[in-house]
Length: 67
Image 1: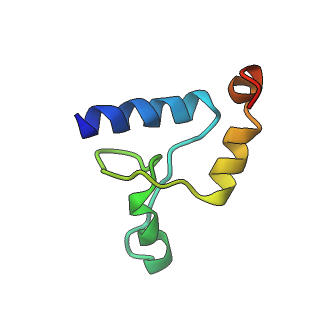
Image 2: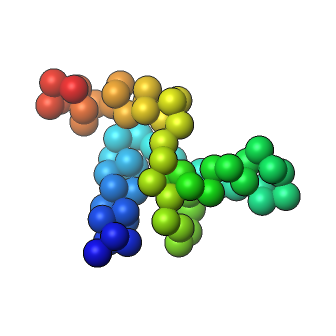
Image 3: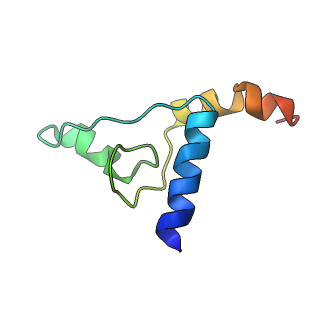
């Protein structure tokens, strides 16, 4: 159930203008992104960065519903 909900949230992220997050696991700073909802591949990530949240808030889909 959790993975299905995460998959739906991930796909909704695409509808709101978010792209996949590519991670270079050799870079410790980027490895922190493994918990990001938009991480490409099978992950259990649920987090979004402040930049991603700003992009979602400015998306046409959110604005259409008075977001």
